[in-house]
Image (tube, rainbow, N blue to C red; front, top):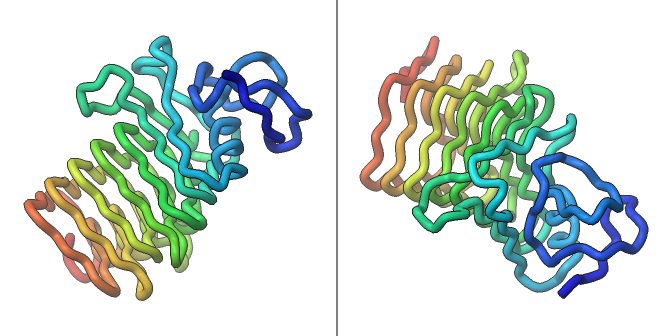
Length: 231
């Protein structure tokens, strides 16, 4: 059944539930639902929402058109199209913007490859204070935090509560701290059955922790820091 919603400047249009049908990063009255449109609907919905992807998008990449995807409500983005707990969707910032910001509520990102993000902090994902992220069966890779003294968390910057399970943070870069993951002074992070590898920063190439971090069955390898060790 179609639902009606105002989507970031669109007129009232029919949106086919929360099933993404196109890899284009567009907001247009064209009969398709982009990931950006589905997120805009979820943000406007007080109830929990689950965003899935049409079978025809298996293995495809969504390249953002210069601006991040902002999550404001309880939402699950499920990129596992064929049910094998492996990422079937890649979302790229195209080295021009951060990929995801979790501003409020609880966000679950499942079976996604998040890549080529670029921001002052949290090139791949930024979790704001008070927000919650559950990252499962996913990879954050190839993302960067700006070449400035504010540049922290190349892959993930956490100021809220983040849980990573069966996930990988690899080959990210931060100019300042936490090439893979920066956990700020207000952040709580828990990693289980996950890998942090090949990341680079001035402090804490893989993980830079300023608050509470719980690591269970974690592989941390091949990270590099100019000062303070690769961890």
